[in-house]
Amino acid sequence: MSVPTATAAPDRPLRLVLRADALACVGAGLAMALGSTFLSGPLGLPTELLLAAGLFLLPFAALVWLLSSRQAVTLAGVAAVIVANVVWLLGSVAVVVLMAPSGLGVAFVLAQAAAVLALTVAETVLLRTSVKEGL
Image (cartoon, rainbow, N blue to C red; front, side, top):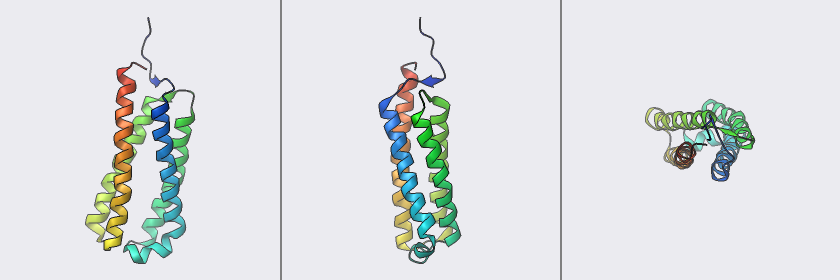
């Protein structure tokens, strides 16, 4: 008889979504970190915020990619990515509400938040599927 463990067996769809999350983080992180000075004015957001967000995303991307590359994707690891994404979404709402970015800035923040939301929903659904299958 098989006993469920705290890890999910190699699950291709979950790995692919985690890798998409990691690649999106690399793209957004590089854009914000390298373009923080240029983007600050048009977006109406502080250079420091863009730089800090970009620099946060790069090691986060590496960790998410590493998680997707392990022999067994840990359920706790995926749950941590989901929690981090939810925190990012809440932060995005706070930026729009509290920092009053330009129209382009609002569009930028909401576009990346929509991408994060889509990835988070996919990760959540696939995590639940893994748990239901007892992997």
